[in-house]
Length: 394
Ligand SMILES: C=C(O[C@H]1C=CC=C(C(=O)O)[C@@H]1O)C(=O)O
Image (cartoon, rainbow, N blue to C red; front, side):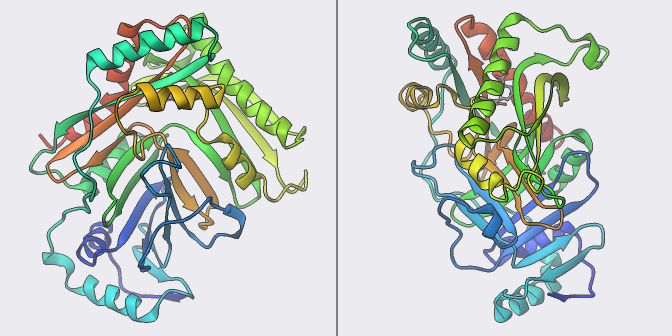
């Protein structure tokens, strides 16, 4: 690894990546101060089913529907930026000429405009309020008819991006507003730009080989005093979250893993909302299971917190009735083999930046007790996470 002694800001790095047509990912883990970014100098970003343990350092960005039209992407960490030291480091196998080209571009970047990569895809489809509510009614009927136990239905919504909007300034504001979220900004040529503040770990393996995942579900607005202890949960939310928990346990069972710790469910805060969360932890060294991260990733995605239970009929229902393309919403993203380990999160509370509009996404878990109006309101509340970010620039 070679280290440049010059100092750069996150804005310099992001501007250079956009000007040089490179893929860039910027992130901050929950409750951490460290902001990191990686830039790929490769020609292609597509990847097959990820093998986390064998992977070089980089950033995974995968869609909800892995056999749909969007590709699974890997932004290889040819260049790694650390915002604290403001330094940039090149990977030993990074193409030397491209590293030089990028470093040169960084010197003259002050005057480049701060845009973002936009998607090559044709016009996005949108879900209407009536369409969403009809889909909820159909889902409740299918659940009552025992075709499935739970399905997560979602929708999207477009807002104009304010003229003064800057993705880097927005990212920096999100760091303050959402300290316990995984905050990210991903921009890939031809694919587009996404940002979000996710409350949900999918798979994480830290430097000590500790595996973690969570069962997150059940939503209510933040209580007036902001205290988790004053939350009161209805049976509907308790059952909805218990289903996610049961699914994770069934994955452990499939892998014949018996030694795990389970804490919860506890009430947690996510921006303007509260959820129920159970934390699962496994010491992969102690149980001698080095591939647990990859194995669980393949079994978990898409989890019953974004798809449903059982997985297959729920996925089928979503593809048939949701009425729009989720794209990378409710897929997963995060750093792989970084200095802090591998940390993949579900792509929730996110938006996609188009040239002049942003598409916001949100979903809600539907069970037999769901009411279309309440589920619609829940998606409205979830969308506020990104609406607040846009509103800062109005
Ligand atoms: C599907 C979303 O949230 C999931 C995560 C937490 C709570 C959820 C719920 O209460 O329905 C969802 O399962 C979303 O934010 O779009």
